[in-house]
Image (cartoon, rainbow, N blue to C red; front, side, top):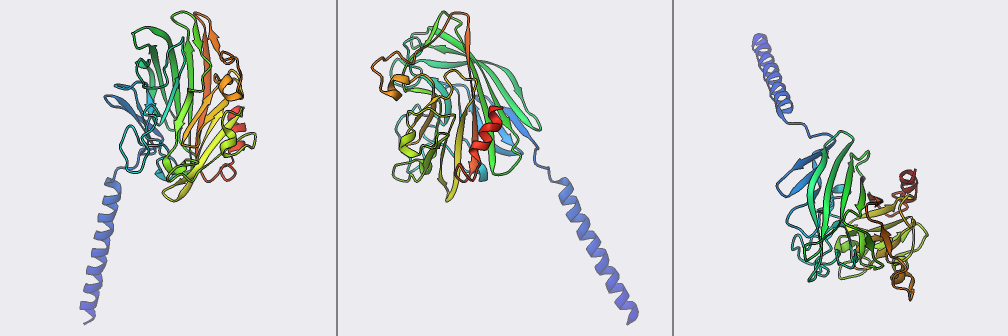
Amino acid sequence: MHRHRIARVGIAFALLIAACAVRSADVSSAAPPKAGVQITRLEDRLRVELNGQLFTEYVFKNTPRPYCYPLLGPGNLAMTRDWPMKDTPGEDHDHPHHRSLWFAHGAMNGHDFWSEQKAFGKTVHEDFLEVKSGQDTGVIKSRNKWVTADGKVVCTDERTLRFYNPGRANERIVDFDITLFASNGDLMLGDTKEGTMAVRVAETMRLKGKVGKGHIVNSAGLRDGQTWGKRAEWCDYYGPVAGKTVGLAVFDHPQNPRHPTWWHVRDYGLFAANPFGQHDFEGLSNKSAGNLTVPAGESVTFRYRFYLHEGDEQQAKVAEKYKQYAK
């Protein structure tokens, strides 16, 4: 009897060891998630992943201008509208040129590079100067040309998108720097509200609309409808996505021309920093008050940061984050 008990214990122990070995093998054979910022080249876009999860894709081919879509914030929540890239029930189909996150302007040497109406200009991708993954940051640096509807190049640009490995799960940070070169004669950026460094927030984050329950606040303390056309160092658009409050703040770098910029931020979800729309924003009779001319052979640089966060601007410490960026 005693020997049988010992045998049963021995068998049970052997089975336990075998089970542990199987679990250990399963763990060791599973591929660990990719750490850091991974950027993968596809045919018409670059896929950007943060620690193995999709964050955005930089679309550069077969499009009127390069753009980033989707834009997945904390909790993997989609913080920009799907349309016109994807037809999602319940979304408004206004402004087909509002492609998630993009840079464009409505008056460049008299040509429209903002809308996608007839005779509009296109920003054409030429080449990647750098595509680099990394533990802490990933970089996309590209060269583009701005071509009118009749095929004339009005200028070129070099842009750098820098994606940061988030130190915390409740935030995402992207820097967007762009230098416009007056490579084909003088470049005149005209005074119009239609521009410039822009994003179209998710429908539920909107201030108004069928499902909009969001809010807008800027560094001057103005809120909601009061923020349109006002100058501020930063502006934050926040609201619910899938029942969770998230926000998207845009920072205007202190070295940018005409800092602090004006904000073309609308209750229907458009959110843009625009340093050129002075006559629209301030109600001036001089329709060229906001014009900016870059002499032939020279350039102008703009720098912005996108801060995707949980909660409202107070919970996310947006003002504090801006000060860190400004340094």
